[in-house]
Length: 232
Image 1 (tube, rainbow, N blue to C red):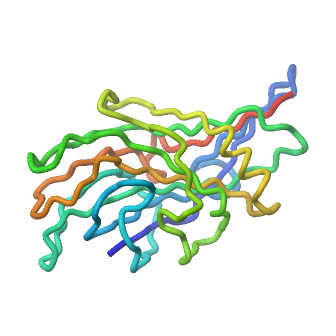
Image 2 (tube, rainbow, N blue to C red):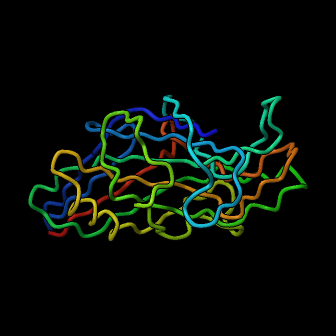
């Protein structure tokens, strides 16, 4: 089974440098206007984390922005299934109107709160990869959300075994946001990202979690941010 939860939030704080004319947009869950969503997708009975897929989706569940964005494995509490759950975090950022300015840089910023390796049956957490889908440009809650769809492309590594608790993980996503501006229809420009633990395996009867835990949009501090800077 797969579940996904997410909700609407708010977007785009704008700062302007008078001297250069450069503009900076900070998109997060508590910015003045627009939208932000985060959430997760769960997959059971998965085989591997190869490529961009962990399994076949068979359910979609709506929810709210979370305190924690997890990428990894969790204990399955279902009495009918002892296999662990593979969890992937998802983030949606509605992109602001650049007002005829040219995109200079875009950076995704996430706060890594905790790395857990509780079950000796599971390997230590490996790398967390970041994925992007230029075709996902729906701003309202959308039950047709593609799970690890064919349009998703790997951006790179967000965190690995050297990433410590209480650190910021930052990735330059300029080329990916540029694609969103070029290909998404006006008024529905959305950046979609997915976080995946790459060394997930299906170990039956897992009793503990094996995850990277990042702050979600419901946190008071260190929320996920997409920072967009324009050229003068």
